[in-house]
Length: 232
Image (cartoon, rainbow, N blue to C red; front, side, top):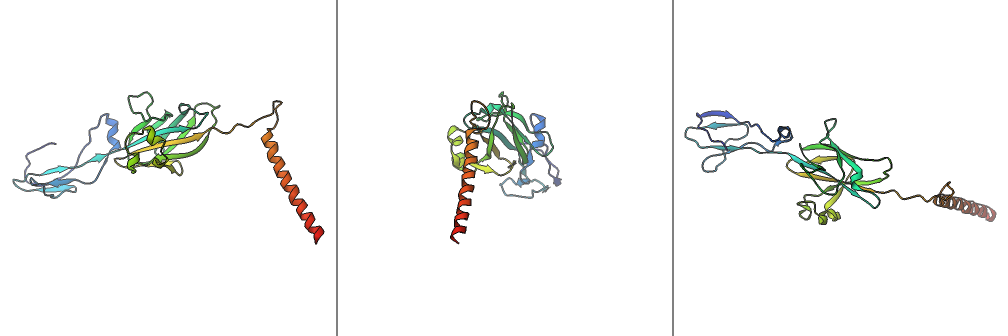
């Protein structure tokens, strides 16, 4: 708070954010307009300007806010969260989270595996990639933590992580970060089922089983048609 003796008159209101580090300054957006009150707490003026009368004692304030974004991984049996890299990007801008190591725990700097970032409010595309060509997986869905539910508020504990009420499916790969809010996203993957192959190679027994069922269905249908023709 800065107090100054001012000459009566009309003043415009503006502010400059000095953030640390300086790069964070662009991530903050003004949250609402200016509010001004007199010595008794009664609101006066505000907006983007104020008329300052003689002997008036006026205090004006404004707030700015950013958003938080966290990317996490939930993997099934046979997969390891750290085998994936997660990215969040607004359009073609530099990713706000770029290839972070998949984890089940939120982490910010100076942690080694940072997967949370201060971001401006807006829309971000989120994606994942496997670190090795041998990592096979099926992406079941992308989920977002429901911070509006009191049960799911606070740090992402194991109770929140395992509570299906706390997570809702994101349709598509674009998420929105709200001003002054944190957005927690997790990718849900499972390992693909193994296909059993004969020891001598060739197609699996499962494949032959499917073909056999199809042929049996065709034969039964043909037999039913022939029987109807004989009866008619």
